[in-house]
Image (cartoon, one colour):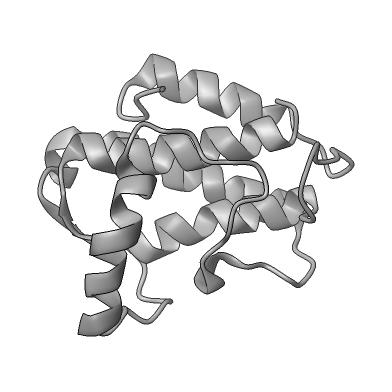
Length: 150
């Protein structure tokens, strides 16, 4: 798994993103490439912006207990796995806008660095280590870049 806090690993991931075009087709799933980029941006919106409501205490307990390990653990995501409702993108999106937002979020994450994320509170899972933050960001993005063949 790439470490998105390291410039070389980040550049490799950005090169993969730059291989996408508005016409790139997914190898599985229902999303168009612009929807996939918007879907990937949700994780960063939850981290950096106040656009998405935080889960209540009960939902956060369920997420920490039953979902956190799958999200921040090393096991890859399955193809066509279930998606949290907050991550479902069912409207058309502007490819260039979503791509630009994702690249900006990636740059911001690397520049803030590992120390910024160590024990930082996540939107859904409580405090995470910088390693868990990287796994969450990197694994999700890698899964969808693979979905679109880059």
